[in-house]
Image 1 (tube, rainbow, N blue to C red):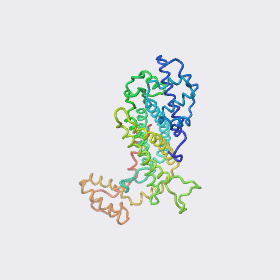
Image 2: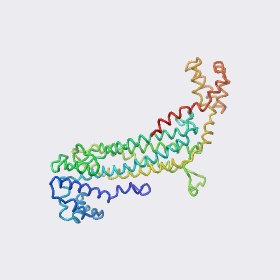
Image 3: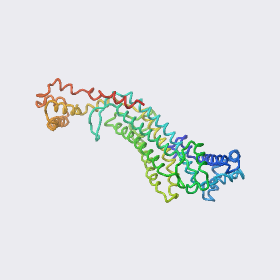
Image 4: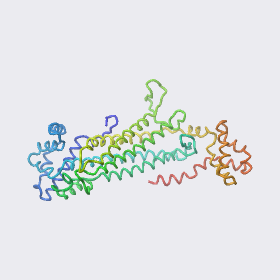
Length: 431
């Protein structure tokens, strides 16, 4: 991932030094287990640890010659640690190290993403509570439907990201496995107790059965979850982009005093952060399909998944980390315009009360079909004339012959649409 969209903490997880450090931890943990089992001489792990020096540049130099990253790593360690290093990697295969390391990197990244989600949830919750009763129009198909509140919009996103947090927690657990089982997973050359020891040491679970690799359905779940979270980010971003349109302007991204919106038009204030989030969501989702395709490898393993994971591992997690933090800041600093929300509510002259009239007509004896026809006729005329829907209703004798005008007036009450908000908030913000 390019620097522009990288944050330091999560980026460091995917840097060469951290990866090689994890490789060394895995090799030394396996050596410790073999010492306890009296497979190799006692004290090997401690001696190698004290002498080993991780030198990414040297490892890459060796790899250029041997064309194998694990061999290059072990050779580099041996150069510093000496003859004792010959006991490293005993009975193991490269994927024991690579896969266990990759899973640990995903786990480390996942924990950062969980913190990001917590931060975002707090930002959303504050806006939800603040605008619990801020009336705005609800839209379906982009068309005015019925009144809701901006707080309810926020609660919808809050619950969605709570679900995303649960999905990510489950996916981190799914990916947190360790395999030290040898060339084709049979433990022919390595004791299963070594695997158990390494797993416990690294705070991972034992992979119940591996081939030469850890099964890739686990990884597919993890990256699919990242894709879902990215789609939720985009849903939020698209909402902000629509609501910031000049014709709507119910919300607006924060715009700094020295900020410029356009190189040509000084008047412009564009929702660039939300648009950027839409783009990042596309990038993150693009990692999902390759992860799914990585499940089907030849027999006990082929290498077709390797290049994919070396790219999507850092790219998807780093991009999502950036996106979650950006969205959190957008929500936290969002400019909300209740006056414009009220103006937009009033644009259609009350036709969104049509369902209340429809329902009341069915109560006083009309069939639903008759009620719908009467109300629709008045609503369409009010739209055409840009006139009051209420005036149309109280002028319709079919309606007033059944429902008194004073009762009809009560049907045009905004509080009718907000009377259950407390119930929604209590059950949605309880966590």
